[in-house]
Structures are given as C-alpha cells and as structure tokens.
Image (cartoon, rainbow, N blue to C red; front, top):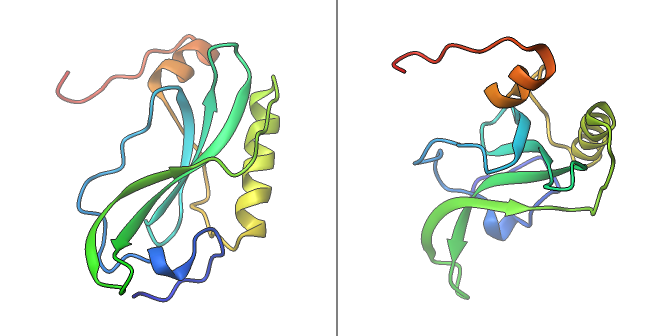
Length: 129
C-alpha cells in the first residue's frame, strides 16, 4: 500500500497505482479541485432543488479480507450533509473540510462549462467539438 498523508480514507483503501481512468465530473458537479497527488478530487455540486453541497471522489484500491488487491476504481464519499444556497459558501466549507483532513489541493477551482455559462454568459469552446 502507498502511504498517504490525508485522513479522508483508511489506509486499507490506499491505491497501489495512479488512476487508470481519467476523472470525469459526476452529474451536478459545478466545480472541482484535484489533490496535489491526483488521487482525490473535491467536488462542489448543485442539487435539483438549487442548493449546494460538496463531496469527494477518490482513486481507491479494493482488497479482500486478507489484504490482496482486487482492483482500483473511483469512489465517491459525501462526508457531511452540507446544504447551502450559496456557491461561495459551499466552496469555502469544502476547502476547510479538505484542509482539516490533510488533503492538499491544487490552487484553484475548475468550473464546469454549463456553470460558467450560467454565471458569466460566456460559452466555453471545447476542442474537438
């Protein structure tokens, strides 16, 4: 198992290799920040009732009871039932939670193109589309 500095997941789930599949935001995700090691992504999302929350996606290893590796996948966890109607509050609380768990994040949030369009009215061009 790879050692890790964060306390978000137990060491039993520590991955043995880098992500084998790229991170893709889940439905409703409007902003995200990756951990510096690339194994965890912090997401801020909007619920259908227009409130915001945050969750993590982590690249984890799956092991049997004896500790033998059975594969890896992206796992989602929503550590707290945050409900707020302000995007900025959701981002601030998500950052504070990540920091309290030792998750070191990239410096800035990435925004989904749909959310960016709603906030600014500017359509983002996607290469190849």
